[in-house]
Length: 312
Image (cartoon, rainbow, N blue to C red; front, side, top):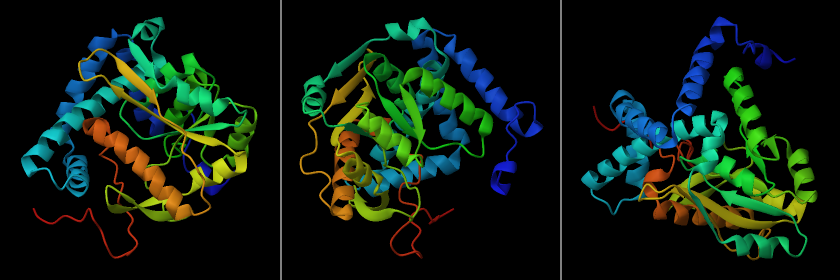
């Protein structure tokens, strides 16, 4: 065991992990509520977080300033408030996705574009489902897992081992398999078995294995794993997105046509194309994207900090 691993005790009884245990207890309690009550509570918590988490509020505001310069400051502030509501709702949806009972299966879900997935699968090649970090991701995984065999890629919560273990157990209940993003062999093995793999590479994971590709016209460190996996698995890439219905009537899952000529052999061109696909989905439902993440943390010029405070 490495020193890095020993720095984070895994026992729930360890005092360092009590906060994680309390978080899990709270999510379990939320999952006992009816769906509409749970998401209403989550939305209210998100609105409260808007006032209690100024640093995250400013990250979201800065992201929207960079990505939607055509909006006025007042319009962006409305969007930030809506986004915090959806982010809080997303916490309740995590609870329902991880711990919800049979009642979750009664939540209304519409699925469109199945023909695009079927067309991609028809020639016997593997399929990677390209998605993004939207606020309803965990509940969407549960919905998708009951419709089809699918594997998911996740980033381990190494500093939060109790939450990490709970997340992994829940995801393995909801989908056929869950692979750490470092487990390339496992991911490729799943592809070769004919199990579609759900992939989202729209966060800043560092400079290693990344290129700077535009996202909303702003350079964003974008990992090249999608191209590599598609090439290694000889896989189609089918975009898959999900959102809360604006009328409050449940959720939508939408498959889009497979990307033609992907991968191209040019990592920057592929990363640019991937970001463009995710960007188009974000523009359809901008309040439901995970704007509290510092997507533009790293820049080609290491001296540039797009999140540096410019005022009091």
